[in-house]
Image (cartoon, rainbow, N blue to C red; front, side, top):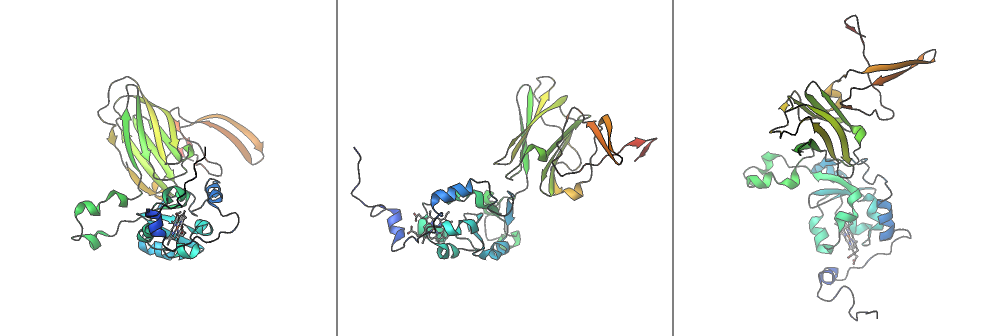
Amino acid sequence: MLNVPAQAFPASGSQQRAAAGGRSKVPLKPGRSLMDWIRLTKSGKDLTGLKGRLIEVTEQELAKHSKKDDCWICIRGLVYNVTPYMEYHPGGDDELMRAAGTDGTDLFDQVHRWVNYESMLKECLVGRMALKPLAATTGMLPKNKVLDTSSKDLTPSYDWFQTDYLVTVVIYTKQKGMNSEMVIVDYQDGRLRIDSILRDYSYLLHIGKCFSFIFFFKVHVAEKVGKVEIVLKKKDNIPWSKLGQPLSSHNSFIKCTERGLYYRKCKLISKTEVTHDTKLFCLMLPQSTHLQVPVGHHIYLKQIIAGKNS
Ligand code: HEM
């Protein structure tokens, strides 16, 4: 039998009821229900305007986004672009605008701290609030507060682990929308080079004297969380005490334009004349290289002829 409770929702004395005191939901336009919002968030549309990139947001930057058609709100250290949610907010756009361009945590909690905004606004996440300059906090906060993990920057980091036969290097890119085209791996002469291209930036791991002979196996990318795993095969099953020696620019995160070019030795498999001024080259990459050229990207080729580059 269906049990219909006599008591109204929210129950008297509940958190919802206490906070609701006199508030009312505004009528939303047709097509702006919670279900419609969920559908929009799952549509793959770029809701932040940042194409999946997560950024560090300063207070000044946050304050710039305080208009209805460009509205960011910070809740518990994370910044959301709520512009697309404006028409779907049951409390109306004016209510949401009370927190526009600011830290709306307290206001949000006063009104409806039970609302699962993290899940509802997952696709609207712009990034974290930037750490305030140390000068402003030194002497005012204990050290562990200044270095609070919620204020960590978005610089990628890495780790590694091993089994008897495999070594896995894990890169936490802290960027959504990663794919295997954004990762270039080279293993040549005992040097491992892993270049993760994150928009205009390059995060490089460059390691030499790897513990024992390895050969590159495969790349896994967890797109949603931006975790990249590079699996390497050990020649033997000897445990590694370390990954290897850091080489130049190891663990650096700089603009791609500052990284410089890196060439690898390729084998020319065939050369076909397509038209009078177009030739089709088929080149084979070294066995331990993972490189996929994304559509629309270019590569540089050079050839050594009589000891000179051309
Ligand atoms: C920080 C500024 C915000 C203010 C001042 C605010 C205000 C309000 C108000 C006045 C209501 C009234 C409707 C009612 O009586 O229930 C409401 C409802 C609601 N708001 Fe917000 N809101 C804010 C942010 C957000 C955010 C960021 C979300 C998350 C996506 C959100 C989600 C909701 C939901 C789901 C409801 C209806 C459910 C409920 O009230 O229990 N709001 N809001």
